[in-house]
Length: 495
Length: 109
Image (tube, rainbow over all chains, first blue to last red; front, side):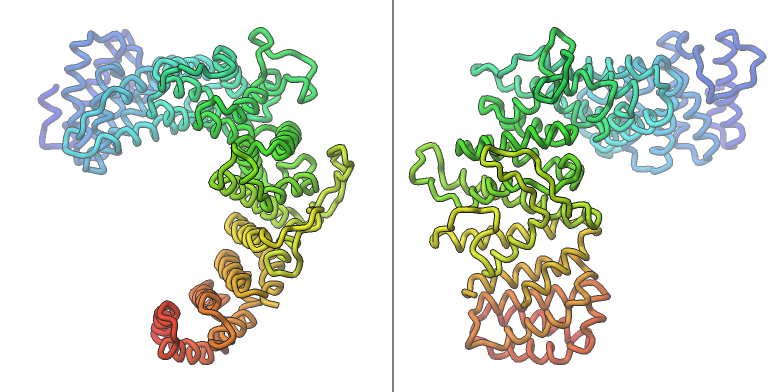
């Protein structure tokens, strides 16, 4: 039969493959059933490793056959063989120069994943294969990285349509196990990203992932150890990176409320699991502001804090921003601004609860940094720190402008009291852009929310910052905001 | 408005016109007229402002089809101003920008 696989006639070759498939099925006691190469095949798992390897060796070249039906039959048959013997050559063939071979190899890989149950075992086999050290080139000289990327693509398609809801939890556990064992492996993070949109779907899978993430975070020390090795960065990053692959809706999953938002600060009345460990929101907000955390951990924590539910994220970020500005703690302020920008980028005007306009207190704090001239009086500050923080303020103001411009007409026109600081000036500002534009074009010296006079020495810098806010807002503006942006800016500046 | 603020204002117009695309069409004629006047005003405006005005012209003339269509009537005046500045201006940088713009306008004439 193996000899027939190399016959000149494609009908002969295909018949040989079908005969092999039927022989496999009969060998498992499925005699009498029609040969259906696409059906799950427990028979393949009962083959001896040597025979499975022999079959794989003989059938793999058929993936390069000139006949499409023959390639399809070979792919289906390979899908029934043991993952350990077919996955490595299939992944290599994903990098083949011939497009037909690549396509057939992808089909075979997908068949392997579909046919081997439970899905968590199939995933474990694939992860072990693609995280193994890759050869610099595939069998026919093409790049190994390309084949790995394609394997991850097949993984994503498999996750999209071949995993039942009840099969997700063990699959997620397998992924977490792999990530925990090798937290610095970027390939595993990319695999997680391919699975993210599907395991983050609302309902059971998403809640399970969030519980796993919470368990990992709760098991880590609250603050990193000062003498920790560099590899600890990856350990502290690992649950955050898993959280980052989930879609935005995951952060409003009701089934995971107890691990996401169970803190008094957020109005919760129940304790989080894992011995009352801080909830995910509290951990993110703490880590993003902790100067002892590695920069990468602070940055990813801030990005994720911006994705939290708006009624939790915005008030928490607002209070921390105001505190940091009052304390002239610029690193902490930058973290809060980064999180706020992430929130606005993810949700637009809806990042602010109720889609109300931003508070006067926030705008005053941001403008205060733009006119700050106290570097000489503060030994802990440098000009570079100030400049980076001012750029963060510019970005945040620009995102607020862009969000307001893109909001539905009238949505940002409501003025409501947010319940702000002790001075009681908690009004909201319905139009952030126009006052900043007036400052940039010398129509005024300061926006209306900035109470103190601006020093003449600082005024040119403030005007330049305001111009940069408008320029950055135009970069971030969605197509919905283009018309109002053009109407507000072009004739005003031209005048 | 001080010269640095004027140059900044033109940069602001450039960035906005570039990003809003077709939405700049209703304002394009006025903007081109303004930028062309600034380009010619070598005694009243500094080089940085005039360079920024030339870049605004580039953004508008090279932009969305709706903007270019709105500027059809202004093209001869713009082309004349750009050619004059490319030939005679004291600023090498401004001459270079206008030479490029003049070539583009000449190819599309």
